[in-house]
Length: 438
Image (tube, rainbow, N blue to C red; front, side):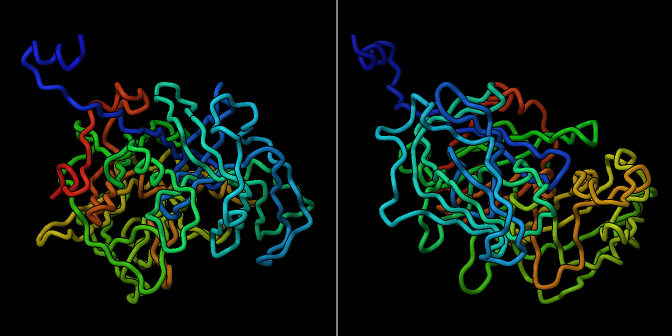
């Protein structure tokens, strides 16, 4: 007897098959220059996880394959340096039994090229391939038939004294999440999901759970594609924000410039509005692939309001004390205008989210006395909300409706438990507003 017949006998309409929306666990670690990251284990059987930058600021998906080289040692763009490093952690596709038939194939238009950081990081990918991947956290389901660019060369414009910088310090994979720009050469993880029917809309939701107890522990969260959790992972309203994009060509998601308020960290009181160092800045890039929040607000006013201090070596804004001593409730409050008249949303970013060890290896820096922060005020001509921002923002991106919605995140628990910890998911439909948003 067919399933349809059984359903008819029971008086229940047959429900069309709906695949489990793809979910990727994400983290924000301590030390080096951390950004939002996914630890992806390629192939069947699953290989060693490749640290993968989870990047809302770029569109392409690539990973190093076998026999890959990272070149550095010159700080001039487009110039090869003297240092060549063999990549040790990579996707070894010939060892996988689940890759696409025929293995790695050459793109029709020739090798793919990706550029980052004002062309200071150039990636060459001479092939593409499809395969299954899982995660270092096995509680999340494996995802099949993912197309990725197979890179074999990276050229990084930076000095490298005696070629001592380890290859592990460099990016080994980037999963771009930005909408596809004109002239995009691919591959795109999200575009692939849409074309294979894994998602019904070009959308995703991302959030982090509560900040970890220890300053050196990782933040944990997840991203869901084509859906949003039915159980709220945020507090307050989920507000569709006003967007403001640069003129000319751009990549990524931009919000209108928010307002910033702050108060004393040691003796909290009435919040003080922080002025702009550069009033010409009108928009901010939302970029999880950047390790700092770089904002055009006055550093002097931030320090006066909060009690933070300016270090000279390294030249960074800092907490006068150890990172662990920063109060868990201390925050900077960024208020974004909503696209719906009268609506706003405030994202309180914990000061502890900026204490990620970016400056720990700099000679002369004493982490037993000060805590240098991954916060760069006084930015001129620029505003970028990076990984620290995303620890506190529940964010939904819905390209079909050209919507971005934010709410106060960093409040949930249990996401690391996978599907059971996240709970039921609500599809984001192409013609509908972001679920639960105002």
